Each structure stands twice: as C-alpha cells, then as structure tokens.
Image 1: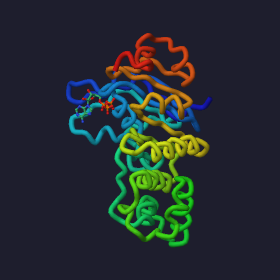
Image 2 (image 1 turned 30 degrees about the vertical axis):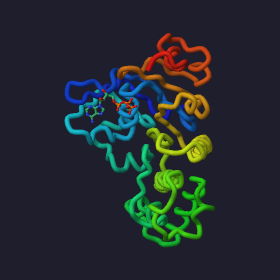
Image 3 (image 1 turned 90 degrees about the vertical axis):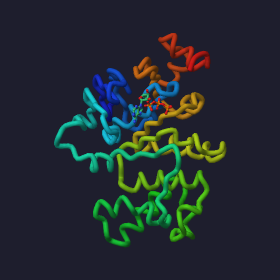
Length: 251
Ligand SMILES: Nc1ncnc2c1ncn2[C@@H]1O[C@H](COP(=O)(O)OP(=O)(O)OP(=O)(O)O)[C@@H](O)[C@H]1O
C-alpha cells in the first residue's frame, strides 16, 4: 500500500527535553490512523511534525525526516504555508474565526488567491456538505460562526480545513471538548472523510481509536512502542506495554 508519509528516525527536542524519540513509521493513504498513548507521551508533538506546526515553538529542534509523497517536508525549499494547505488540521477546541459561517470556510481559498464569487460559493457549499454541516447552516451562511453549537463549530472547522483541498487532515483530540452525540457525529465524519482524504487522529479515547481507525500507533514516553492494524493492536498486541495500556492497566 502506498504511504502518504514515510517518517524516518524522527526526534523532537524542546530545549533539552525529549518530545519524541527516533520515531519511524509509514502512514497510509485513505486510511484512518489513530495515535494513542498516555498524557505527555508525544502524541501532539508527533502530529505537529507532520505539517511543521511543531517548529512554531521557541527552542524546538527537529531531527530526522518526514517524507510526504516522497519529499522531505523539512527540506529548505518547502514552503510551510503551502504544506499546511495540503495537510489541514483540526484542534481540540473548535476555533472558528469571529466571522460569518461563509467567511470561515472561504477564508483559506481567499488566502490562496481565489476571488471569483461563484467559485467561492461552490467551494463553501461542497466543503460544508463534506463536513456534514450544509443542511444545518445553508439558510444562515451569513450568520456568525460563534452562534453555532460546539459540535457544529467543530464541523465548521473541518469544512474550513476541507476548503483548501488538502490531501491529509490531522485531528488533535477533536471530540474531547464535545458531548457524546456531537462526538459520535465527528467520529462518523472522520470515517467518511477517509474516502477522499488521509485521516490522522490523536485521541485519549482508546475506544474511539478502536471504533474508527484502520491503523493504531501506540506511543509511550516519546517512543513509538507499537504500530499495526487496529484489530491487531487491540486483539493481539506484540508488546506487553501496549496490552497493559489498552486494557487500562497503565497510563
Ligand atoms: N511547547 C512545549 N515546550 C516544552 N515542552 C513541551 C512542549 N510541548 C510538549 N512538550 C513536552 O513534550 C512531551 C510530549 O508532549 P505532547 O504534548 O506531545 O504529549 P501528548 O501525548 O500529546 O500529551 P497530552 O495527551 O497531554 O496532550 C511532554 O514531556 C511535554 O511536556
């Protein structure tokens, strides 16, 4: 199977503190990959290496390579802004801009130079449809995004990520601030999105990883302990630490 990301011997240091250590793994196209592990094990750090968001932290050092479609994204000639268009991100707390629903989704395309009103309207409609939000907002696109519920705001953030036509969408604990019904919708949506995108999700919720992912990576103290098909990780893990974590005996 074709990897979208080929991560090679990747380490991140915050000053002299280790964020992640010597991580190597391949992430597959049109699959959901879950990143699990206890608090502080490096899940978010790892996710943020994939779109170079990690380098916005002062004093951070990244070693190793992240090949995205064959090219190391840490090469000097890679433009991080263009990279982040191709690799969108959705965060734990829904963070819509204090603008209209329409303008939130049109924001990225406008930044990337799309001015044509009809084209923008099409992108907004298609992105909201893919984010399973269109029916709920189609009659109030000019209302403030801040008037939406938390779950709707999170789907709006997903639409905003979709609008720049990415190849990958990274999710950092996307449901942990939501109620169970809103969380279930986001879970369903992540599975749906893999038809068109590669989905990578950091989650504290082990059951969520089991429900929605095809592959699971288990991190522990900055290291990748085990990475395999989700059924294998949950039914018959190789590593005792993995087993203890997924059965709730450590972490
Ligand atoms: N901005 C930062 N400055 C200094 N150290 C950091 C920073 N961000 C993370 N770290 C450290 O790097 C390690 C990995 O943290 P990271 O946030 O990636 O873990 P995590 O598994 O995502 O944790 P959580 O589940 O609590 O979000 C931790 O020791 C953490 O304290």
